[in-house]
Length: 88
Image (cartoon, rainbow, N blue to C red):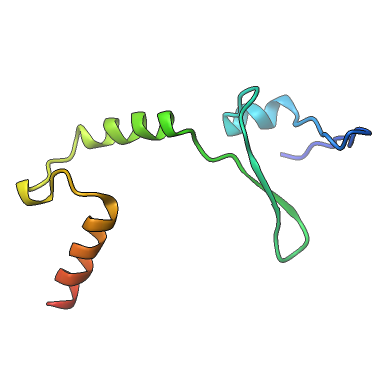
């Protein structure tokens, strides 16, 4: 997908509707732009905290955690996985 756009005098650009739709972008949504090592601009649309929580909750409906792991943070889970992985 390739579209041309023009930079306004205020430095803004318009992202073509098909690109916005493909990326799920909404009016007012924040995006991050950065220049990669090839001097191309890349965009990271990310997701909102609310969207993340909704998606996480949907995924977790299908996962059963052992009692010892319930309620732990992601960092705590990574630490446990690292410790147990080294012990084998």
